[in-house]
Amino acid sequence: MPMSDKYFANPAALPSMPEVASRLLRSFDREDISMQALSDLIAQDQGLSVKLLRLANSARYSPRHAIASIKDAGMVIGLASLRDMAMAACMAGAFPAVAGFDRLRFWRQCLAAAGHARVLAQACDVDPDTAYLAGLVMRTGELLMLMQEPAAVAQAEADAHLPDSLLDHERRLMQCSHLEVTAELARRWHFPDAMVTALRAADDPLAFKPFSRLGAVLRLASVMADAGDMGLPPLATMLETQPQLVEHLHLDLAWLGEHLAPFDTLVSGVDQLLH
Image (cartoon, rainbow, N blue to C red; front, side, top):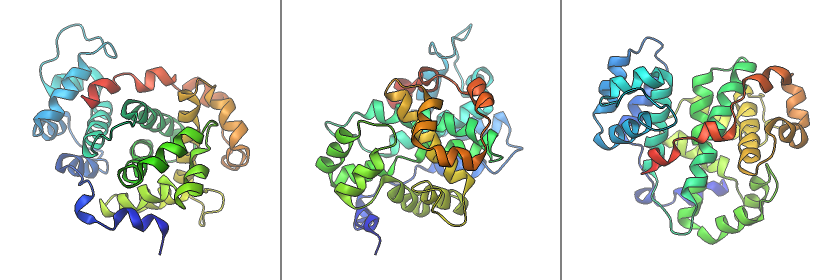
């Protein structure tokens, strides 16, 4: 039995996927979804709508006039960004706050990983929307681990002084990684099979068979999010920690350098999504 199963022993204690998030997830397969349809979907959740309107009116987007409707918010930030931010807010709201855990830092890293995954996907012939969503939820398994073993999670975080080292400390302390837990949660939440597989693959992309390009993208996006959180250069950190994976993907580092957004830009607005 996988060690990650212990975090699912009590189904009643597991967070449920918000209904709006479930419908948003299905919309990722629709290229023809309209701004009106997306706005109507989001508007069904009043709390979500408030968060997104707050974000659209924030310094991140600096609108010329006050944004008063979800559709207007979409016109300001774009359909793809509106859906991305709505999904981020839904995911953040699905998990309870745990005393002593830096929730803001956690979701900053999730947003950074999602943003980096989108750009890496473009360089690797992987669907960018799928990569963004997978990058966004990639660390949520840690929140399930936190609910049951807060001391062990805190110790793993404290020991992870180097980028891309958290997984090793989790395995040492809890005999599994947050990626294993996330993959199982994604399966139970009926995420697409390819995404569940990629989350499992991200734990060790070069060892996973068959090779998952999305899994590799997720692991590299996680490394770069770690780098941003630690104030390190993302590309140099990625090359230092995962040289074989970078080589395997034949990444165009010059192109990535031109298209990667700074960490502070990727995580701007996270306050509005959490409160």
